[in-house]
Length: 229
Ligand SMILES: *Cc1c(COP(=O)(O)O)cnc(C)c1O
Image (cartoon, rainbow, N blue to C red; front, side, top):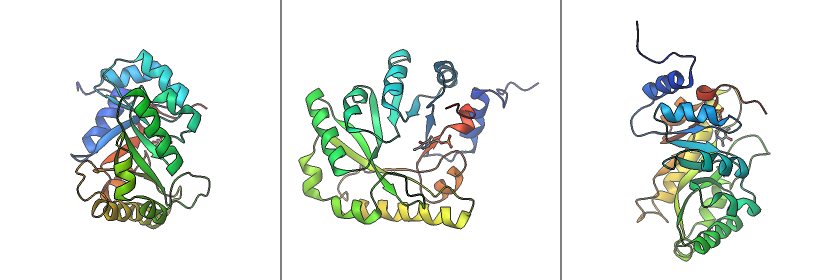
């Protein structure tokens, strides 16, 4: 009867997700640990932005997929893997130290390109996650630092909320990220219209993230199903 794609296909789940997302929010389809066949199905359904969390996996998939895919790196980036991803990546979400920021700039210079990045800010309860604290990122960013690294375009912030059921805590985390983004946007980046991206929200919490100002969501499980590690 209906010609909508079925809800138990990747295309169907993507269509349902897109239909529930407000305008102005970008969807990163988090394809880590999923096979190429699943990425191709999403690509066939029009998805062009994919997120991966391991450097070798990103590279392996990037060389197999069509060249109009935008690859986003969302995992912890080890310094010795910067070179692996740089030729392929269009946005690195997970800059979590000044050292990594400088290294990415150096490698970009070597390749003769610019690279867009987000600064990862840690607000969640879990202690194992990477990222700057809000205070650290605010004190690190200065017009001098930004001007000295012309190869990196700092587009905004990425963060994750606590992995808890308590909606009040999740809201508080997203709000802290929104405020931190706003503070940078009105100071160091006041003259940088490209500082415009707040990446927050995953399968289970993206509607709340969007309610708190997210304009880029990173969704894996809802699209591709459970990952097999
Ligand atoms: C894996 C991952 C996601 C996607 O998580 P889902 O719960 O599968 O939607 C989003 N962001 C980051 C940083 C991740 O590592």
